Length: 406
Image (cartoon, rainbow, N blue to C red; front, side, top):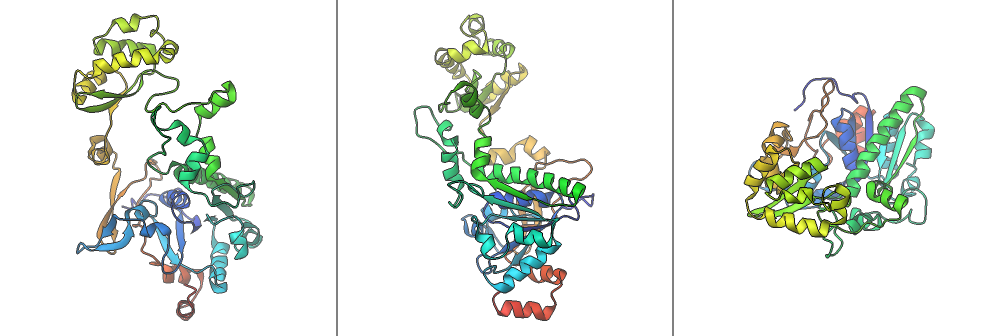
């Protein structure tokens, strides 16, 4: 809940015309940091993810609500305003709010906002201080610019699936929508940089974010392998392209992770596994040698690991200072004492459920801590409130609702 401490982005007003994940993840991060975020949604249906269930949140009587778990993950600390931007009156509402806003974030297809007169050029002509961020699949130019962008397709197109999955299996997507999430985080960083520039110069700017760009950037060392060495990295399952042993091993009752980062750690691992001669073998004494001879070494290590259960191995490995860890399921994660100690689950009052549990932000700031001001909003929960603040009176709001603009 709210700490009462100063907020890093207090006074920053964000107009959020995004839906699904990349955009809402960005604006939720800004909201967590203290920005006031107005989430603009279609009347009647709202953000697509509201219907992406089950599971759905249950109310105080145990009945299923229209609030999906998916929607709840990316929309805390926002207020919901329903506006039909296909109508002239709806467009006028957005223009009025944009005049008062510091940031506008949208993830419509290229040129869609121009059709409504809500593009960056138009809005920034009236408010030059506005930071206008567009999030699309492929950016504002290029042969794919007008294609719809989806995380799954971008993971394939951007190379991530080619390096994810078992070496002898089919390409795999990552279990969460990482292209969306990385794009959302990159967009957050870019917006903060643009605000810093605006504070120094008085001028806002346009931020052009693309899922494909973010996906290519997050290839990281594998992208560098190709550019520097011409190496097209293969799928290696849970193994590492450049470090051995750095992977999952099967044990007597499940699996664990071993992440040996240097030769000293490898020697200690061999002692724990009771195979000390492997550390002195010229083929395995250095990491480069272990990478070249992984097909010989790894089966030997795997054979030794089957002798004990996960708890026994983790105790031995941790006492020897060897990086390791369990392979937890989601229930294990939220039961983990470190996750609990870090307060990664928070509860917020909710108008239907009474209280809703949410995954907290991972950002820990000493002077301007993140706080949970309110739960993800119901569809249109704050429409009247936001419009009154924007200068509309009660009669105008009633008329706008009657005409279907809100």
